[in-house]
Length: 467
Image (cartoon, rainbow, N blue to C red; front, side):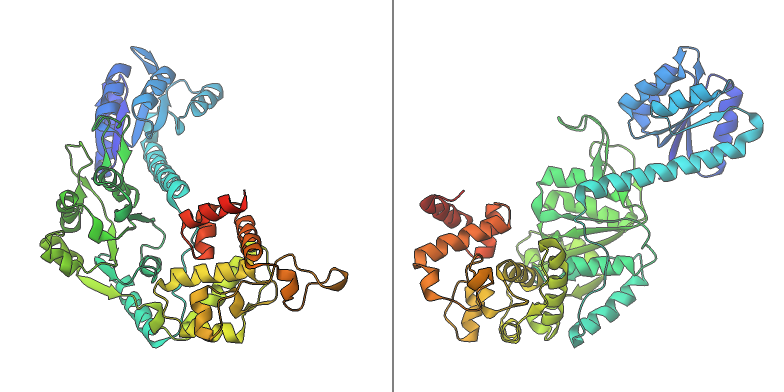
């Protein structure tokens, strides 16, 4: 749907001239001849840009500006006046106006440029607001690795990047890197300078997911106190990535199918269609074909998504790429943990290559983080790996040396002194205390690093009197 511009002016000739100009440029133009009519139109139509006359028969333009902001806060307002002054311009900008323009029949082209600029700024604000709330700090990057399966994946990603309209379904085990593949497709395509937005369908309720994806109108439901534009609108021109699509509730699936087929949708509670140019990439670690058999997923949506399926190989099939990824995580975490670790010891590297990695890349990163927290040297030894990995080395599970252990003259102890370690209970108490300290007391993160449940950690904290 083209952007909507509301023209507010009590002079008919000005309104008609501006409307003719804007409609000729492809905008949807509306008119209002008073402040009251402007507020009513802003609330009903949610225009992207409002051209607001400073002198209106029923009120001052600055007062009308404040009223409009109350019902349509996202709109970019450009004030028009035949009596321009620097003081008025400064006041208007302070009150939230996007721009200030003198009314002059000979400057219609200037008005057109200002409207385009206002729309661009509005789009940037929407994108930035979303990124501030939703982004995870990940920069776009390549898919690390040189194994045959990853080289094949790279080739497929390059092909998909050249078809920026094609819907993609990415399949693979949990933690295998499906989101990274989706980002690679987006950033290698012609949409690279447009938004890449993501949402996990498994993490939200039906109504919240619907509101996040499609947006909602003011008053659509009890808590809808203002208009909300959904991810489809914010991602216009870019890519929307829906993770765990197999968990999308059945009532939402027909609306989403319509987006894929027609590139149109309606906000929750809305009555008019909104058109968008968005590439949709979905991902799932579930077998969607089996969900069809259980009637938990629509057949028509399944075949519409499966235009171009991509399978991300599990980590255990990537050979030496395991070590490549581990080294990348070490470099990344050195800055976070303020350490200078060079990598894993040769023995630990062999363990990493022998392990089956049921949690895939996500598990490898967690193991690397745990090992770096516990490591006191330049390389991470087998002793700093979780118990299930230590067993692969033919060694009994063991705790790492105490972090505070010191040798003569305060130098780090070169070896383990059984006498200094104390009883098994003392070792465990000291070990848990150090892990808690390393994660600033975050018990969920500490439990993950320790390889135990959060409730088990809570019991041990109470037993040892730790805080």
